[in-house]
Length: 183
Image (cartoon, rainbow, N blue to C red; front, side, top):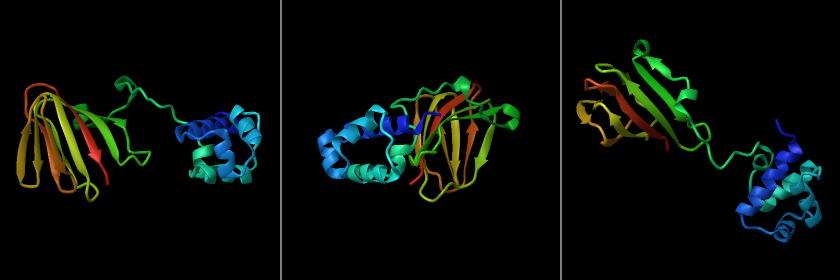
């Protein structure tokens, strides 16, 4: 883990630049001197809690935005690095590519199912919507009492806050992306 002063340094500079603020402007908004802000951004300052709160308030961000390890502006996800959730003795593999662990309100999954396999899903949270795109095979989706067949290079969107099921309706491996939007 990085030293907290280096974390704060990266975050203050990044947020200030994203908000298109000069050091002079941030000094005026926060009440922290320009020289202290410059030291903090260089990682040589040792700001007090009070100073960090002033900076956070001056930039209109949470205190945690200054103290949390900064995230890279990109993330590469490799399927080979993910342990899938298995169903049907491994005939169904669900890879969580981007879980909803950052309050994004959505998650993205890559799912594979062997021919003839399927599963039932209980209703998700109220208002949840699924967006599915099939890359190979054919997916039969049953939503309550309606059935839909979604083939290769086709997509479907549906309210997932009701009982629904998925089934590989082909003789080849079913592969699809499933995006869940959670309001």
